[in-house]
Length: 178
Image 1 (cartoon, one colour):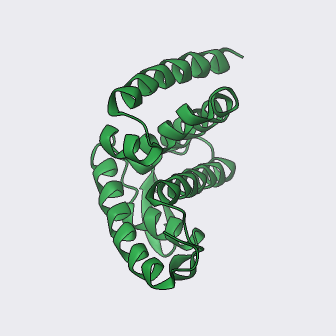
Image 2 (tube, rainbow, N blue to C red):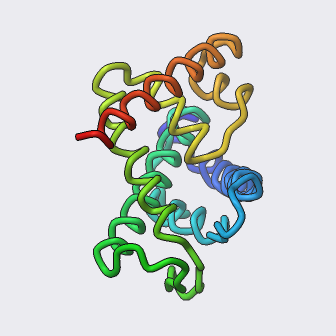
């Protein structure tokens, strides 16, 4: 999408917003029982952080999904940090997120923060593999979608995913021992 093409941008955002909602719903459907964060609330907040209908133009679909993945990651991390700062280990509580009551467990917060810290370390070693993790973990893209967004082949995405998962697992175990 070209920077000057306002009509293309106006048509682009509603389409990708709906696609993000679909992907978030798919991702949340695969989460563990008790994890009831509503995908619409997450996507809505990410959409607003990206600028909503006034968002700056994105160079491509991949650029948009990369920005969306980063926005969703930051929202989840901020949410987890606020909850843990307010009350550590409290179990299930209701949290107001833009007027929506969202039950969420402190174990989810701990896991999310650990993944985020390890992901930041991975990004300092291999930024492209970290981007793949963001697209798969925080946006819920499948291998085909993530590979297309990154401009790589699906087998490469699968290899990177295997490497990144192993790297993150080792890093998280190492951090837990510190």
